[in-house]
Each structure stands twice: as structure tokens, then as C-alpha cells.
Length: 446
Image (cartoon, rainbow, N blue to C red; front, side, top):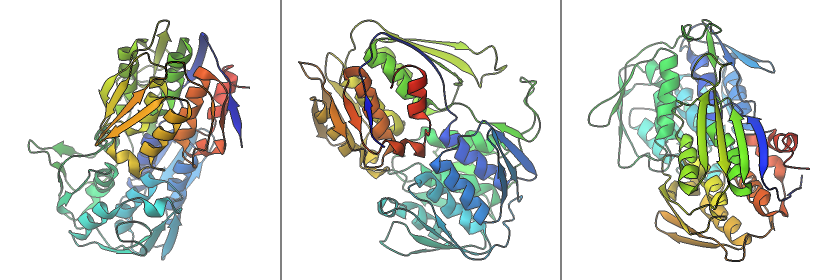
């Protein structure tokens, strides 16, 4: 599918944020391991979350999906007998990395594989950390990458040292299954931790399902053996009930809407975001504020709790360049760069080295997008520079290389300058299947 995005100006649009992909993945996993039935409301249905659902079904978990919810019959940590399985995770790094540890709890052997790109993405640090506590994990292709064969039978736990400099998902994978280890789990990171805010998100889900997670003064995550239980009623929200987990809106997906206000001028309002969320991608609003946008947040009177908010972004003057560390929020770096090409001064974005290990090499993707619209790009160590074009930004043809975030970031540039044609535009289905429909409904696309 090919889509051409036309220039828009002085817009006034309202959107509802899609559900969080990260929270949906983790809620499905926690519910599968929990005791009893969990109803997951407002889940994100996308290619990635479908991978996680189908993987857990293959491992014997009973899951029923309807248009507005997912019902999971938990196994209380005792994975069913299902025989050896081969699970295709496509290009869902979240699914595959979380399944590596979860497969240890299965009584059978599980082979985890994926697309050609997935087979290039690193999981060695996770596998070696688990091997260090007795796990039987075999590489079936290149060392340190999928496909892998995991022999189940239990997770011993103990102290686990891990290099999480390339992905926080290594830590999250172990954390999610830690309550079911044979002994207390202590996760000790070696060096820096990429995308640390996603670990906070993982812990938030674990706590919602009753697990106790402590972060010690020396930076070690500690989890005692326990059993997940479907969330208890939230007394501040009368509509909540036992056994129900409601997924909040996604700041990374909403970032494209907020970016539209920044590059087009005018106002964009987004409903359904938690103003107090642990999502690190909330920093996008701070970045837009620093660049000259006005950001306002009010509680959504319909939500009854902090799970819903109304966030408005307005821009009437010039955009300023920005200097910012994005090490905890990799999923919105491309969106931010798409805004930076319209600024009146250069921008400097640091903490981006782990972008090379995503669905594509996103540092290279940013370079291509930036130079394709006529702006300058610079890279030194862990920092990229975006140098705006004196004569303004122009249109181009984008091949997103099957990366959903590249396609949506190209759309942001198109809204600001016009005549940006995106080939393979259907790749947005990985995280935001109705992205193009939402733009059309808001009058921002044909």
C-alpha cells in the first residue's frame, strides 16, 4: 500500500489514544501466569500483540479475544503440557524476548524464531544471563540471535547479572517470570540500562497483579516467589471490578498526533492518556514544550481515575531546536526528529545508540528521512544532530523498510511539508493498525 501525505496548516483535530502496546504485552503475560481468570479491557490489537496471544495459546494458555477485551484463564504458574512447540514471533522483539524466560516455565521444549530481521536482533545477553542460573538455551543460528531452543522444566532464580545496554527487555523478561522462580530473584545490571522507563512499566504491571518488586540501594531488582493474581478492585473507580485489568493509552502512538500540531501549527487534543503514567514516552510533551509548543493537561471527567486525561498541544509561533537525552524513550526519537526538521535552529539528541537494534537500524532510518527532506544529519558516538534547511523542508518518497515507526514519522514530515509518499504503508499494523484511518477521520489525510 502506498500513501501520499499532503501538507496541512493551522489544524484543529481531536484523537483518542490507542491502547498501550507495551502494557498490553505485559498484561497478557501476567494474566497467563496468574491464578484465575483475568479480563483485559481496552487492549491493543496489533500484529505484535497478536504474536504474544498466539504464542501463549501455543504454550497451552486459554485465551479468548473479542473486539474490546481479552479473557485469559491463568495457569497459576503451572504451564500446561503442550509438547514441543515452534513459535514464530515475526518481528516482535518484545514477544520473543519475554518468551525466552517464560519458556523455561513450560515442561516442554520451545523453539522461538522470527523474520530475517528478528534473527539479526540481539538476545545473547538475556540468554547468557539465564544460562548462568542453569537454563538450557541453544542458539540454532548465529550466536546471540534467534532462533533459539529453550528447554523448559523450571527457572531456578538466584542472583542474575545481565548486560542490558542494548535492551531493557532483557530485564523485563526475567522480571515478569521472577515470581515463579524456585528462589528469590535478584537482577544485577552490568553497566548502563537502555530504555529504563520500560522496566518501570513492567514493574507497574507486576504490582497490579500482586507481585512485590524492590529496587535496592545498590541498583538490584529483587523479586520473591509469589503467584500473580488478577487485579483487585480499584476503589477510586467504581466501574472497576475484580479480575479486570484496563490498559491505558499509548504515549508513543499519541506522539504522532502531538507532532502534527507542532509541524502544522494549530491545536491537537488527545483523549485517553494517563497524566500520571510511568510511560517514559511522556517526555515527548516536555520536548515539544521546550521547542515552543504549549502543552496543557486536564483529567478526563469520564474516566473516574487517573487512567484517562485530555492533553492538548498548541503551536502558533516558531519551533526552536532542542538538546535532549532520549536514552529512556527510544520509540519516540524518530517522531521527535521529524519535528526537529521544521525547527529554526539545530537539534542535538543523545542516548540513541540502542536504536540500531530495533525493527530496523533506526539511526540509519533517521539519517535517510532527514536528508531526504533536505535537512542535514550528523552522528557522533551516542548523539545525532538535525540541521534544518534554510529554504524549508520538501517532499520525498519513503521506503520504511517494514518499520512502523519510520512510516509514521515520515507521515509527520508530510503533514508539515506535503508530498511525502510512503511505500509499504501497511507496516503500521505492527503497533497502530488504524493509524491512516485516524488521520483521515481527523481530516489530515485523503
